[in-house]
Length: 175
Image 1 (cartoon, rainbow, N blue to C red):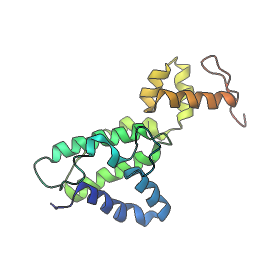
Image 2: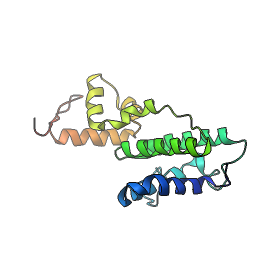
Image 3: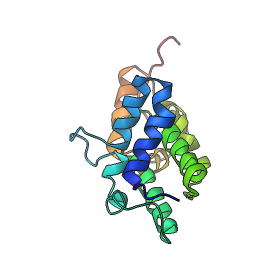
């Protein structure tokens, strides 16, 4: 084990696993782990999640690794939910980070990554599919892990292009 703090471990992960893939990817990942923009409410940065605030400056060693793993699980889930852009980026990065934690420090974060599979698909297509099943906006919001406001914005964007669903007209470009 190590005396490295969680914050230092995140920095190590970014430097060793993400930076070799390019500066652009590193900067995206850095923003996801340590959000600097303050316009997002609630914040999406992993280090800004309430579940992790008490853990950032503590060493990874000790008997509380299960509690840390649970806190990481909650923080990752909250971060993905709060991230309003394409969910594939946080999904891939956090999954890789959890694998890094397990390989390097023996900390297993109990996340069912299959539950996030829907996030890798295009959200608008998911909305269209769910609308054919008469899914409510609230249910769409919960299943897609975004706010109801985001669902409404996506629906408005779709209707601006002319396609019809939920008694609204929608057009798919090129069809």
